[in-house]
Amino acid sequence: MAFGLLALFDFAASTADDSSIATLLLLVVPMGLAVATVPLWLPVHRPGSRGLPLAALALATASLAVTAGVVFLSGGGILVARSWGLAESAGLIGVVFVVTRWGAPRLALGAAVAAGLAVAAMPLRLGTDSLLVIFGLLQALAAAGAAGVGLYLRVVAAGRERAIALVRAEQRAEFARDLHDFIAHHVTGIVVQAQGARFVAEQDPRRVIVALEQIERAGAETMASMRRMVGILRNPDAPPDAPLAPLAGVTDLMPLLTGFNGTANAPARLHVDGDLDGLPVEVSTSAYRVVMEGLTNTRQHAPDARAVNVSVRRTPDWLLVRVADDGATPRTAPARGHGFGLIGLTERVRALGGTITAGPGVAGGWVLDAAFPLRSAVAR
Image (cartoon, rainbow, N blue to C red; front, side, top):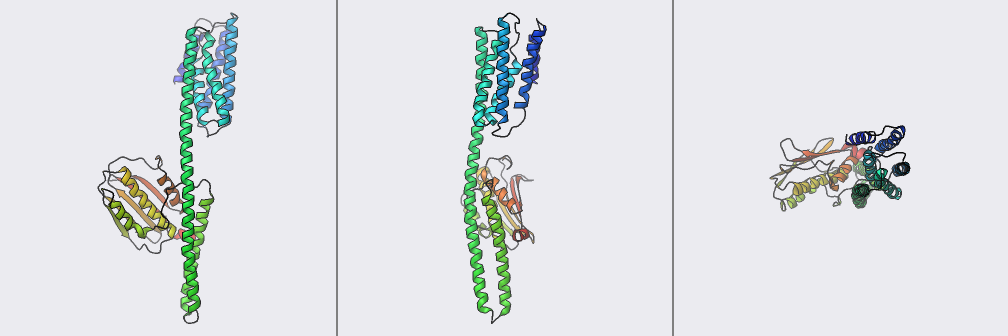
């Protein structure tokens, strides 16, 4: 709306005293340039766009050419301009911001400088009086401010990307250590079972069958986890996560809650429904990490909480984990938050085929829920 009002003002100011063809022609061209800036700053561009600074450079060049033409014609006495084009100025200032924020680094600087020069030169279309020069300097400052804001947002985004990349690298190293420990654990069991089966083969053949079934199950879990974790390690876009202790599982939750109760005002209580023995290692460790993340968020964001309930329920097909507190402190949903722990934890749960949600509870407080499929954890 503001852009349209500026364009309307330009039209009224330029045709107030002179409606000749030359005046209308030199009005239409700046108005066209003003409209041409809209497709540059209105859409959302991808980072490092090369087409954006090239288009901005073309518009800046055209604007400077129009300024030079208006100055030349005015100097010859053919036309006295009534407006330098406020809509065009606003549009090019927006272009400066968008180019510095999203343009390719090697091209963005030149395009932003050219657009800034075009904005600064526009008041010269009315003459070279000191007041017009001051207006030109003010528009140059506005363009510089837009460039500064765009550059600041670009630096902030780049810093966040570097931080995420660093955490991703740390998490891939953590996955590698987990993979090593997990495979060593299962391979050792397979070797022990095979050695025992060899010694009892002649005395009790039935025990050999049981040992072979255990070996088959351990081998299937090992291969499934290897494929999943190696895929994460090889993926450069693997999600980040916080550094975690290797192979800590749901059977280790009580020491975790004991340590939490020693440093938090709100007591944490553990509720277990079902047998937690024999869970796939990656499911057990991820469930442990869900509880740890929930307790960490309660400690950081809900200092007024009076109780924390940790529930772990095992069904034939699912392992369900919930961490709920009764804190009244408002918190940001995970999709809009800035912490890396919950982002990486979400991707870790999804890698196992599970789901995770976090948000306000029905009766208040904050609830973190995670569900892990048990059958697919071995079958995949």
